[in-house]
Length: 361
Ligand SMILES: Nc1ncnc2c1ncn2[C@@H]1O[C@H](COP(=O)(O)OP(=O)(O)O)[C@@H](O)[C@H]1O
Ligand SMILES: [Mg+2]
Image (cartoon, rainbow, N blue to C red):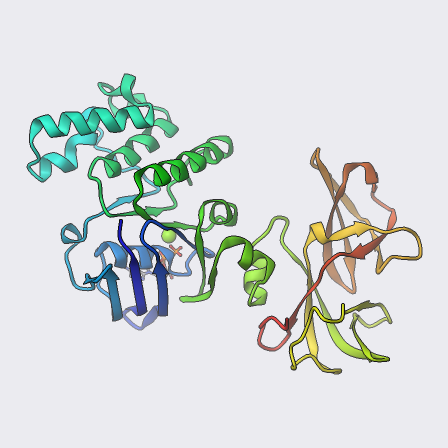
């Protein structure tokens, strides 16, 4: 296992700057997830770690060793892609052995390692099959196995679950994290899927337009998003946002939303930013699960429900507040129906500067 340190890395393709000064630190043995929307530069960053692309500026270290300009084969890494890229004419066994043969590893060692990895991944009965005779999930495991047999210091994953159906994705996700823990390697995993990022990561890096908007433990980032972008990107259903203006009300602050006189109290003590002064325009963020049915009279606002989704364990009631779409994730027993006006209170809200998008905590 090895520590990975990316310092102020920039990458341009021609005139297009794709990475604009990225810092990533992954402790040895850690599982890091780079997460962000399509096109934000995740794969580019992973390819720079692998040595498949050359940085435009900045450095990459694996432990003490600077690898910025080393060839891929000198970096002691293995990469697992979305497309499994198995050799179609080779059996599972030969696919697994391929990388070791290329490195002129001893035959007895190859056999022992392939058997060990096949056992680990439950591929023992499939070793003589060709890839075309495997299911998607099995192919994915062969691709993982091919990385594992090489015993690299660093695993790089680029959206490895994207080709699997939802049920299998959830299962293989757990398998990947278990394998990581068992192997004691360092892993860097790229995905656009915030659920994968939340569930897999020790440390998460949220990328947006070529910069890291926030880094940290998943729950920390989820609970205290540094920007409106991060707040909206993590969580399902996504956080609700309503525009508002800060107002003074006695010695308290509140935020008036929309053109009417609807306003939400801002809990004293929770927000200490000196920027939070009357007149400031803000985006108010409330997670759907932080909206709860209120006793009459105690509601922060009433939601006119125009659509309801039944999910089983909960229902999601859709409506609008001050012109902004709102989703409330409510207990199924709440029985909210289309056409109802339901009283809701706000368990927790977040405030973002409307101008900069920065959190105003
Ligand atoms: N070889 C390349 N030449 C030119 N542009 C590229 C190249 N590789 C990636 N890009 C551009 O860089 C941006 C980021 O791409 P990528 O890292 O693949 O994003 P992600 O993996 O986050 O979806 C995209 O706009 C993409 O078109
Ligand atoms: Mg990509």
